[in-house]
Image 1 (cartoon, rainbow, N blue to C red):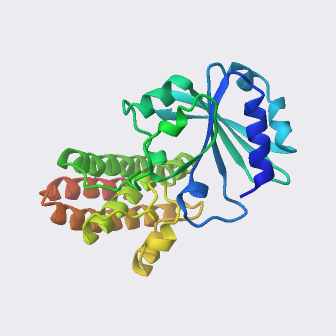
Image 2 (image 1 turned 135 degrees about the vertical axis):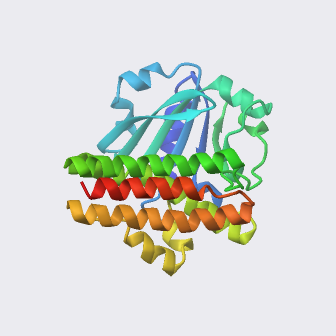
Length: 284
């Protein structure tokens, strides 16, 4: 861990009366594999953080900024502003700005932040509030068995996106078809791969798993990786049709196996009809 960077972050927050606590989360706090490219996920709990959003000069106090991005993270319905900062000679730092009231709600259990359940380090705690957070129990971001409705919704969402890819390919709108092919539909495919992997193992806790796709190559089988490779294609209409049907075939295999283990009746007739319609669009 870059101690100089941490000291500068703490000094910045210490000098601002509005910032009441600073907490580091993410891979640096969970005991997972890290390297020189690991991000520093820094949560700033403040009574008023408006000036940090309107002026970017404060970032330079930590080092030379190459580029930064304005983003938001969602927590219990609240959109929290963040600044993702890439420094020239330092690690990337993802700053997020939190109202102090949210920290109080996490302390009393009214709200739960999944990331803190896996690990966090309190860097600054002016009011002693952060010290009262529940200790990490390793139960954050669990890949748990989905309810029947959630499982079926994942199927329908995947098939809908498959239809969208086919629709735009049949119209000759390759650019937009590629956006869908490499966006939403891949998220549904990955979710089903997670569920199938966990269902086959009895749904254990596994910090290796990441709902966003990180470390996928570290737990996926060689067979799955080989099939996933067929689900990507170049900027070509026929290649994209092949990758689409490769995704459909793989998703079906993963979903059927997961449904069997969850004892959920698989909607085979619906799948047959949508695949038939995709073939019809391909033949236009």
